[in-house]
Image (cartoon, rainbow, N blue to C red; front, side, top):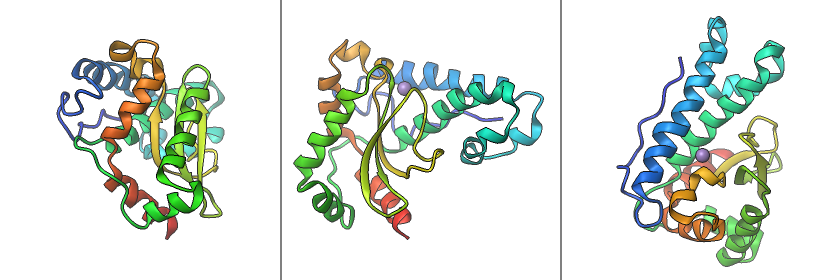
Amino acid sequence: MFTLPVLPFTLDALEPYIDKRTMEIHHGKHHQTYVDNLNKALSGFPELLALTIDELLSSVQKIPKEIQTAVRNNGGGHANHSLFWSLLAPGKQTPGEPLKDAINQRFGSFEGFQTEFTKAALGRFGSGWVWLIVTPKKELEIVSTANQDTPATDGTGYPVLTLDVWEHAYYLLYQNRRVEYVSAWWNVINWQEAGKRYASAMK
Ligand code: MN3
């Protein structure tokens, strides 16, 4: 069975940028529902329940047709949110080396990176995610995916950083103002974790 991960910080730790009520509902209700629906879809498939979430998502084309969509959506939802929580932290951080250097080289400056990432976040129509990934050619790239799709499972690249741009991630505090949510998020990024992910992608 898949389970909801415990948050690495308290529900109010990201205030005022991400509020406690949003965290309660986003983690305790939305993410919990992805976990519950994934387990439900996999009931009767003990060999699939034994896989890790990454193994499951990367073999989604090979699992029985009737559960593929449910696994893609709910498994993706579980994987994406688990990653998202790990990449948030209270207290403003900045990227360390060598990720900082790689960002400057690829996007001209940190501000250049912020501009491109924000553009991708605002340009994602409807629900989805924005990612900083390391491509198979070991280059940094900003991509966005629809719904609960993930660049890790379609082979586009290895996620270093991600932002949830579903409305449920920001509606309580920011209503329809995605741009304010994105600009607040820069204050609560766990760059230490992003740096670790970058290092392991570059190995
Ligand atoms: Mn979400």
